[in-house]
Length: 161
Image (tube, rainbow, N blue to C red; front, side, top):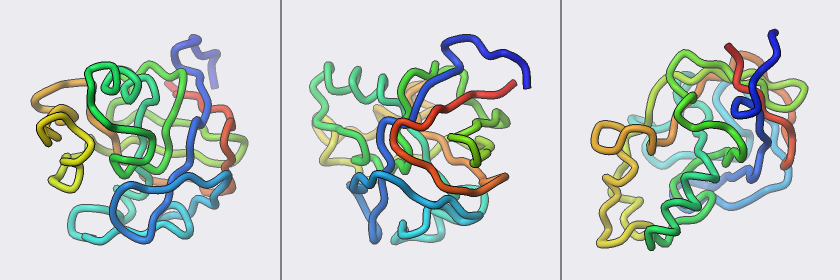
């Protein structure tokens, strides 16, 4: 692994899980396995979950910017499992890998498609604000798990080349 610029290094701000649906609720640590965080569930497995959509990530900085626009969004509200701080979100593109803590390795597989369950967290219920096709750089991303393990809030995150 080569040295990474500061905007490719960050930390886990929040880990979130639910029994299905949003918002996901904060936990201090989680075990990451091939199908995602243990204890996390999705309601609609046709569009969520599975090996290529195992862990959903989002940017704390994007959430703060959305809040500044007046959206009542918060970490976990959009169904993300990991809210990351300090990573340049524009660098989080499909194919990139992230080292999470000392054990976990994730690979970004695709941008998420926002759904109507996110309506309460956006002004005028316009959840398209986080659509990659309409607002590039504002989408959450899905990842596959290349190596599982235990993660904790504040663990370091490194976006790899």
